[in-house]
Amino acid sequence: MAAGIAAAVVCAWLVFGTGREVPVVHAQTASSSPVATGAPPPVVRPAAPAEPLRQGSGVKVPASIRVAGTVEAVRARTVIVPRMAGQTVPTLVITKLPKPGSRVKVGDILVEFDRQEQQRIARDRQAELIDLDNQIAKKKADQATSRARDESELTSAQHDVDRARMETLKNPFLPAIDAEKTNLGLEQQTARLKQLQDTFALKRKAAEADLRIVEIRRERSERARQYAEGNAALMEIRSTFSGVVVLKSMYKGMSMGEVLEGDEVRPGLPILDVVDPSIMQVRARVNQADASLIHAGQVGKVRLDAYPDLVFDGKVEFITPIAVMSQITPKVRQFVAVISIKGKHERLMPDLSASIDLPTTAVPVKPVAPAPRAPGGRP
Image (cartoon, rainbow, N blue to C red; front, top):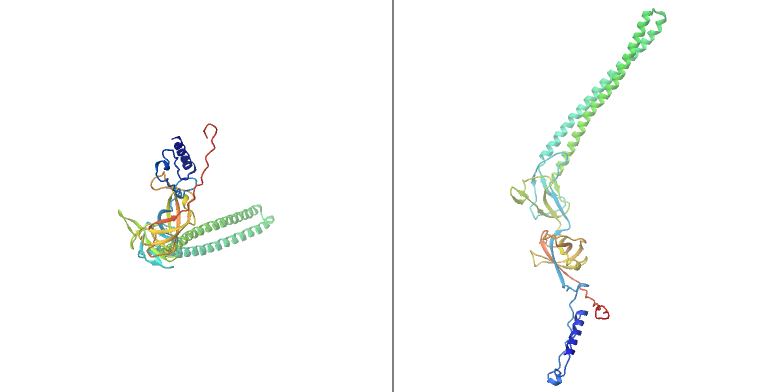
């Protein structure tokens, strides 16, 4: 009996201490011996090979892992309602819009808005520019006439001062009262000349300010005209690459509906997407417990939930190094992986749900030797 207990303890230590299965050899006693009982000897079967384990965890690694995500285009463009420069426009009216799912080429019109208001503003600003140009030309002519008149008065006043100064040369030969009158006349002409000179400078500054006011009005009008012409050009949006049109939805009253021709849309609202179906990828979310099984360069199979018969080759391009919060609960974290899809198909379109099967590489766990025991039976 003691020998059987000892054999069981040794087998348990070999199994749980080393992580490997070993064949069990039962201790035979005199009563259980095959010779004594006449029974055939026990068959010893070799231990079954251990399943692959993740290194350092002791957890079984599956042969493959499946992640789910959404198909998206690598090359895509979202067309939004343009924002008007220099003015506040509450809404714009769509006059031309392609059908959903239609294919467009480079240079094709994606959407066109009513440009009558912008053209009217541009024409009004152009007419205002012409009027302001005429006002500027008239003011310049009037100022030139006024300057010539003022310069003539200055010249005349300067001559009067010169004559009065020559008259003062006769003072030694004139009576005292006549000499005093001559001196007063010179002082009067000199004061008048100084007044005209000061007035001349002030008039020129006032004329420059008056002309500058009109020029500023013209600059504002010119800027408004340029804004209006630029806004009119924004009323037509063309495709920059070949792709497929996917219309957006918007609120219409109390419900959602696709954007249609004739709808009034506000600036900044997305109305359609142009996607290039030749290059697609899947953006998948990976549970934090499975993140170590996925790495860049890993290949797998991509299947569409809507079309199970379609299978594409995929390759993991990258996986984010930082986890994000799960949409189910904030306690769970997920990593985002981007898987590129090789090949193309007419049914392979954005926003389709997809699943990706990725084979994993298992690394067996190395056996760990038991810790040495100290005297007394304690490690």
